[in-house]
Image (cartoon, rainbow, N blue to C red):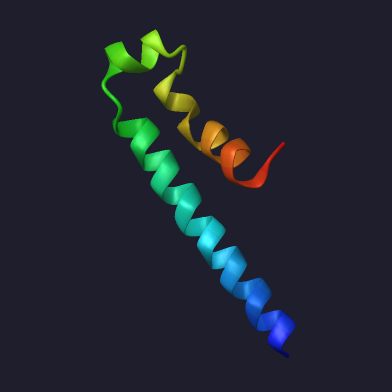
Length: 54
């Protein structure tokens, strides 16, 4: 039972990190994003790779 709860906590923590990362990338000013070679429409993909891996 404890393992399942810990697994769910970890999943919730990763989801929160994913949402926060995705939102930060999406809100980034376009000129800064382009300087970093990031297309804001790819925010979800970039955040997913950063949090969950490939």
